[in-house]
Image (cartoon, rainbow, N blue to C red; front, side, top):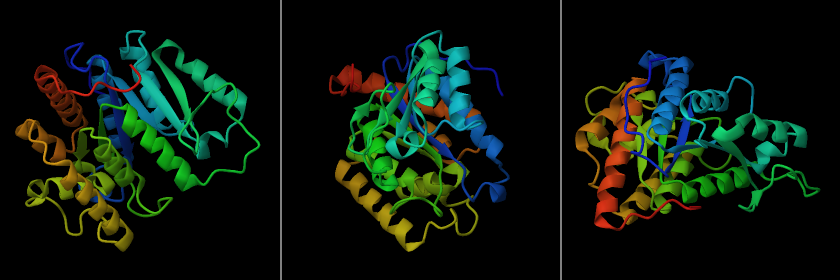
Length: 290
C-alpha cells in the first residue's frame, strides 16, 4: 500500500464520514480485482483519519473483511484517537454471541467503537445485545442501520456495490445513497469500480461517462428493480437541489478514477473544501452526537 501523503490534520476534524465499499461484477472487465477494493478501503480510511475525521463503516466482523483493514489503519494512523465507528445491523449482530461482540468492541480499544443498531433504529449496548424477540427481517434491519449512519454522518463515499444478488427490495449501496441525500448530507460516488456506485454516479454526473465506459456499464443497471431504485434516488436528488459547492476538477477525478490514491485524495479535499466553505457561511449543520 502507498505511504500516506501529507494531509491537514484538522481538515475533517470532528466529522464522521460514512464509507461504503464492496465488490462489483464490473471489476474484471475494468482490469481490477477485489484487492483494489481493499486498497480503496485502506487508503480512503487512512486519509480520513489523518485529516482528523472518523470513519463510519456499516459491515460485519468476518475474518479477513474490510472491517479488519479499517481497524489496522486506525491503529496505525489514528494517533490513539477514536477514529473508527463500526456499525452492525441487528440481522448481523444477532448471529453473534455476546462474548464475540464484547471482544470485538474491546479489540477496537481507544481507536474506535462498535455500534449496534436494532431493527427499530435504536442503539443497543454491546453488553446486552441479544433478546428473546423473533429474528429480525434482514432488509428492515439493514435499512435501520443505514438510516442511522446517514443521520449521524457528515457525508458519505460509495464505491462498488452489488446490483444483483442483494438482500431486500433494492441494492444496499443505492439505498445508502438515497438515505444520505434524504438526510441532507453530501454524497460522493466513485464510478470507476462499477456496480451500484457507478450506477449512482451516472445518474448524478452523466457527463463523466461519455467516453470511457464499456457497453452495458455497470452490469444490471437496467434491471427493473435497480432502475426503480435509481429513479427514486434521482427524484430525491432533484428535490434536494443541486450542490455546486464542490470543486469540479476533483469531482470529475473521483467519479472516473480507478486509482485508490486518487479516490482518497479527492474525497478528503472535496469534503474539507465543503466544510470550510459552509462553515464560513455559517449554515453548516454540525454532525449529530456532538
